[in-house]
Length: 372
Image (tube, rainbow, N blue to C red; front, side, top):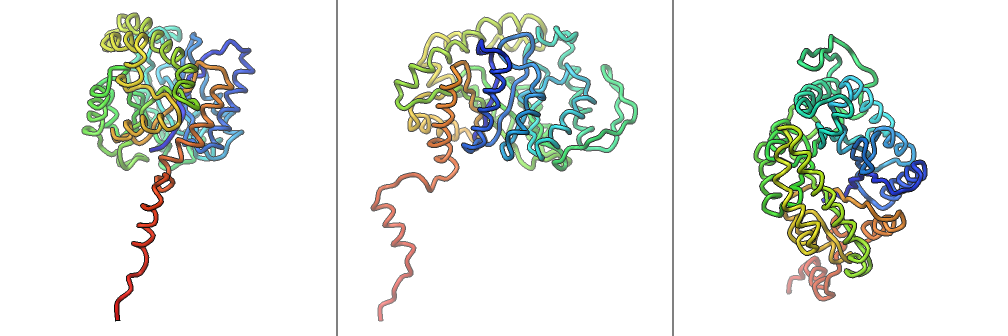
């Protein structure tokens, strides 16, 4: 199971330049500590995210050399798909072939509306833009005629460094989006929005049952990840003291926003289904930690045990969300995850075992002597 970071880059109240620099410092630390990828959300006209993730990733590419860099998500309806192809290809060249590209229609019709895209057009625009994006990343010439976009035959430069093109994925929260991701042969970041283990398993099963390889694409098998809120400290109590309130606050923010978003466009109505679970997660720490299938928190040993439950779901990676606390606490948390948690899952042979068990294995490996 791989460990990535899912970053909203929520406003900390610091000057923007200082906050961005601190985030770039974190990205360098993620690479040093063995994280697989760093992926940024895109949000607009809100302190809960960054509006220009591609610029941030371009900067991060100059401070790193091995960690994969990407978006979760780039909002396709807000940018012409031909420009999106050019930016993605340039990022893949800048990173030396490390781009992981997550795309979507955007979770908020309010945000898309700020850019002149009504909520009831977001899905249709996404569908066309995605088709153009995949064409442009994989083919020499793009030729497309649709309702929202008309592209006469055009070639694009540069091309992505990765062949056939970078891994494409989507953030999915509904049955329909999981099924679509599977049929298109995409990677998926799956999230049941606090609705618990059974709902999360159902969504993943939908993705796996519908997955079909895109013969022209980079993935040869399904790739499912989950975003997880995390708090970690030297002890369970320290982790709870530092992270419980920020993690519950995040759920309360969603509780306020989702009912309003669900009423703005028919394609977003399903979001209302998760509101009762969000409300409970914002008020009940035990539910958030143990039943919502969204959160891990505790000492390194406790976090490892919790993550093993997610591993049993069959996912390929977890995308840890470490936000809404001061920079120094995030830095301490990522150090603990890098030193104690990631090694546990990357090499199970490093697990400490009883001495007698180790000796038994050594004896078993010795050549058996035959009696004369």
